[in-house]
Image 1 (cartoon, rainbow, N blue to C red):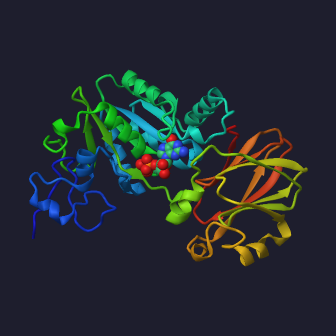
Image 2: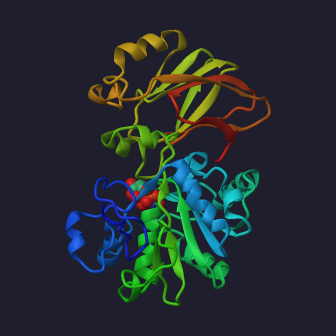
Image 3: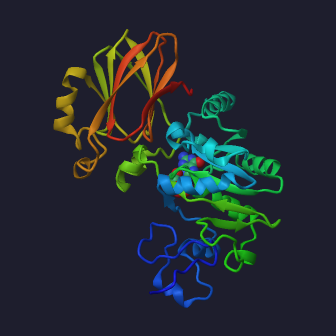
Length: 369
Ligand code: GDP
């Protein structure tokens, strides 16, 4: 039996079977000396952090190691799916280490949105999650908005600590890390040759000019996000790529909105009122009567109600119903993780039902906008 081999770059145990898992190394790379995993190879030669993913248990183990270190934690979340991309239990795992909360994808909000209001909102949410957030930075890794502030915040808070970057998949972590790499690190010097301590540590260390590191952790997969259950083809429709144009509906009780065949929003009971949909504009919204909704779905999922298209619609987990009561006097959103949210504009209260694929997180929250 062959001895277990480890990557000379990051210390991960090498494997040759599954390119989507940590430690993957093409067989050919074994000829080289030192041997590094594909991920380190890419970072070294292309300045590119690939998106490597982990499931919850492994991720939590990994996070647990951060709590024992003196580190600055940079947690990237997706403003378009804030609750869906928050790492549950993060506060417990990082211990006393401070967190810079980088709220990415602000470019998706309508242009008129007041950033201070968003920051205040994020602050309240972070508090609810008991996160020791030393700074909240709104940014767009894609549109290069607020990025200087991210760097400043990291510099200001890190002292002489290493930086751990954590986040769910699809929040824009690679995009952001790649920016950091190209702006701030001295790659040629170190990545493959240094002997990193702890050869079982499944982390990629990116050297900084001052001898410290940015440590990129694999993205955690949260299957409760719509972005994780749709096909690749539909992902580009579900994830908006330009500012969302909110769509307002005046509804009477017993009316229903379909978001393609991905989800359904029933206004079950309440006064006539308006609802604003913040979802990707590539998804068609179809209004119907509640009493006709079941039948319409069965007959038209995949054609009139799309995405998903006919060929993909059966791949989608069955829709399950979430009953939601919006209390009187509160201004709230209903979030369908990864798909977007519906703002309940009136404060008159409402009884709602949201039908979303099984496993997808559906919650009500204080209104974001
Ligand atoms: P990772 O899985 O967290 O590493 O995320 P990626 O960096 O691969 O990005 C995931 C998706 O989000 C890609 O389609 C990116 O184009 C997109 N994305 C990343 N940053 C932004 C951003 O600031 N705004 C928008 N609109 N999309 C972004």
